[in-house]
Length: 366
Image 1 (cartoon, rainbow, N blue to C red):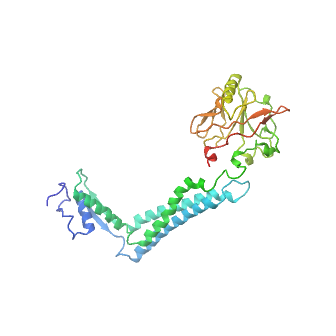
Image 2 (cartoon, one colour):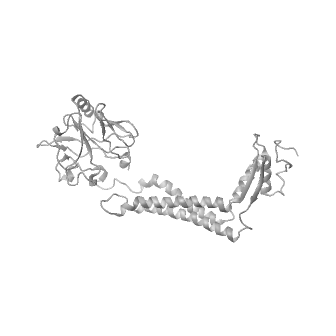
């Protein structure tokens, strides 16, 4: 018989792979020889088929797959039904993230052990030696390749081990749902539901101050006058209400900046052309949310000479004199501006709450 490629295992003659008397393994071995691969050792790890030792290994692997699926289901259930909103003090929501992390971690760990156990304890031991060569593929080669893939499927033993087949299906299906859960999770619970969605209101809302305008204060609660901030300087301010500088109003920290006259004129001109921020400045003073619109870090590094506000976490930069427009980094939305004025006693107050949503972009997605 003429060799298709002129290459074959040393000391052996090629056989007709279309011979119906050949077993699938015979065709696989012949295919290996035609590619100069000699299968030196190929033996099962068990004595006989469906031995007690083999069944024990199969049960253990099936348990790992099922455990992986069960842990993934725990992730899904708690992702959907467990309270996730932040609450002050000790609350059930404190356990939301730990439960998700532990359940997903156990699921992936069990899946990894199941795959390792399958490869190490169930598949046959094989030792092969190959001399590599470059030759085109023939019809016989394609047949051999197809039979080799089918033989691998046989050796994975899924077909004759229904317990493993069911365990894989039950174990991997929940993991697939886990991968999709973050993408569709927002469709399950609307964060903006209700008449007064919390993400649209901060401590500067007059509602939090019995309907009166809220003063801008330091972290100790003392109010701020215009002369307290030097030209080119800035100060972090908080709503002058009870607990205004605590985590209860973590969305309220604001940067009050005293611009130099020329810079203030530029900012006023930009504000005048913006329907939302128009008339939000008071004199040469301007105030922006300190919470970066990218990931919620404190954007508080103010460059006086360039009028840029930098976020140290991911290097987003905002142009203060142009409605805090992002000019560098991953942030894609400008910082909300707080409308400010001075009350009858000469202290800064918020003319209203923020007119745009404070915080990262994903907070305002429906």
